[in-house]
Length: 201
Image 1: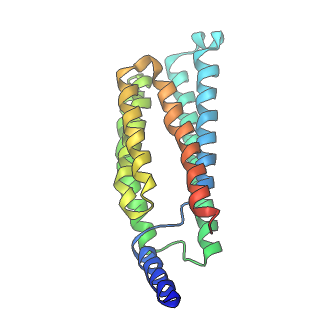
Image 2: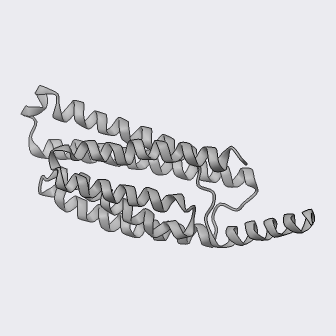
Image 3: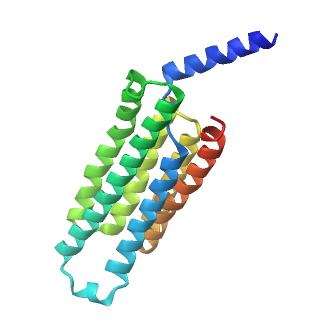
């Protein structure tokens, strides 16, 4: 009986690996959240609270914000790729598979559309709507990709969408909602995923 249960468990794990990307690491979520929090803190203290920033031109502020966002994005993606590769190697799985490529496609299509949409607002100087739009499109991307990976991604996506809507309504607090979404929520999600899946392994 015990052998049959083990066989069923092995078959289920094999089927999941063939249809879902299960190499996401909770540690990458934690580090992505910390990176986003640091990026938001830089934008707040350097551009919003610093009296000297009042003398900066609009184009200069936009360039600084764009550079800040790109650095946060690059580091977050790098953490995600590195820790996913490390987890795949540890568990003896192939990292680049058809499932992994399909997962990346499902994730990045909404993100690319959201990035272009956000750049339009950035070009117009509407930073608050950029923050709201990035939350919304990121949440939609997570919901879209959740069927190809862990179910917890779906709930994180819903949370990001709700925070994006709040950011669009309360524009003066959009940076706060952005920090909660990309910073706090990622850290909490990462800790939960690490304890639930990575520690078990």
